[in-house]
Length: 153
Image 1: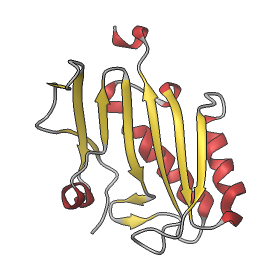
Image 2: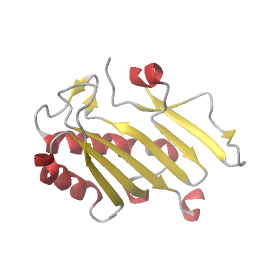
Image 3: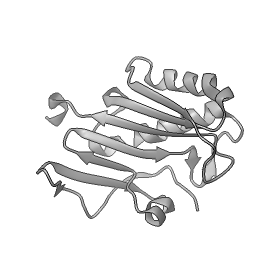
Image 4: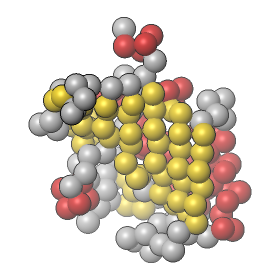
């Protein structure tokens, strides 16, 4: 299975109400993982937008094989692109999570994070994990964004 860079296809659940009355909207990409595992690329619930774990896959190909910096940069750029259907960008990101397979990659992944989010300074978590679905993947990231009242206009 592969994960593509395309994002922005809204699901059938677009505009449904959450249990507490807030608007709930899901955006899918053309990743087959979404159908296989049953998830959306991004979900908006009220003022929060959550972006699912994002690997460095573009058009089914792993970018930066063996290079944690390139993989992190690619994954972050794809995750930020998932905010576009909601009218948001990197400036709206308030939390990042980085999952890496080797502690030795902290500096490279940190450099990619700093380059993408340096002026934004979201809260961040970095965790070393035992591995991913594809052993060539060194990095997976998640982001959360927040829509300010000004961005609702």
